[in-house]
Length: 125
Image (tube, rainbow, N blue to C red):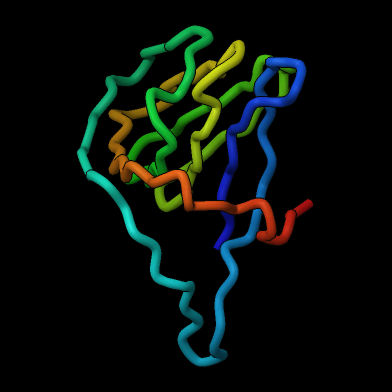
């Protein structure tokens, strides 16, 4: 399973990288269990664009419907589809841009504690 990580560079710009969620087992691979602080759901209409903004908290975001374009302040763009996982941790700096490309975007947001660290997770691509 891959995860799009949105984070802040030392320069204050945001960047996006793709990481693989580490799993064990071959028949039904499973990740470690992680603690979370809160969970909420959100919908955003097609055509909605949010200019540069920061993540309000370190959060995992599961895209459940619609097409989403995420753009870092450095200009990297990715199109995400239902089932994609995002880890937004750019709580400082210039932030990122989001665009709802098609259909209503559905999200499940999961607030993560400071101990949630993906730094050692394998990079993809």
